[in-house]
Image 1 (cartoon, rainbow, N blue to C red):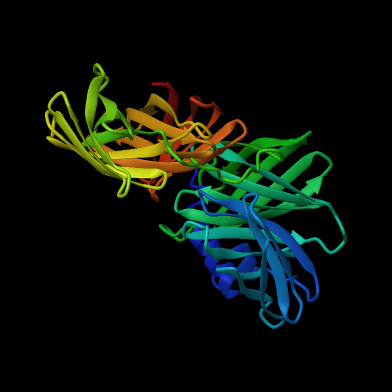
Image 2 (image 1 turned 90 degrees about the vertical axis):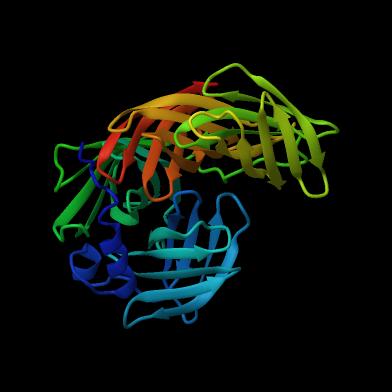
Length: 416
């Protein structure tokens, strides 16, 4: 299946936005409409973190950004009236942005608290219009994360999925929101236009998206103004570490409990649970436990635990161990399920608060996943290769996945 490739035009769009030139993107061919001494409000997302941003095109330029529901971080820097571009920094963050169309700006946010680079989009808020933010996902023939903001009759969005992220701009008319983005497909150089037709209903925003290069493919987008929560993770002290093992496509479930002695269990390939016991060093976070001929050596670092397991672990004798700290304040739930479509396999997820990690196993290949949830939706990414989007509630989720090799399908998980 050929995916809709919503994010495949991202490289061209972002390059044009940050340089103020280039070919193929609508931002590169439309006269900049960004003005001096105007406030622009918007959103940004990296694929894991999301937040809000405000820029003021003064001399000096000022602004602020907030990751999740964290504290606002002040920004300062420059605004060039010649190139209609911003360059700001503050609190360990760097922002570069340039003029788009219809009074919008788009660019990048990088720095402390953000994984890689985040795509940002903002619109003119000088008229005093109320800015409403929506967080959600898109799924179907492609899968990813969507962050949107409406300001009166204007709307902007960032989309994170295949190949990275890109900005969309559009308008609001009554309950109808229309967003578009045009750029060159990096693999072919062909011009692609992505359109999202959405409807506002109370606190939710939903609809579908299509592209001109792949008109038979479609995604469904769902977002909510009450789902824009900060990414929260496990909080210590931890009374157990809950996770999984993987070796060349085979998986198992593992739980390790600190103490003297240390205890735990392992269930390999869906088999019976095997009891583990051994030692735990509180000063180093190191576990050394055995059971059923299997030996695990792993070390906890805050909420994360990594290590290896050796023994009769078919087909190999060594497996990687990854676990998440579980506490009375933030319990880890574990979900198990399968995928269908271009890559039939299995999925194991761990969730604590809105933080998720896991593994996608197919064709004797293990792909680590990380992501977040907000309200009824969940989003996970495996590097730049695979993206999962779905809805539900812990531990049961279902949705669609997409892979960069142009395969896609469905997935579902429930309690292990």
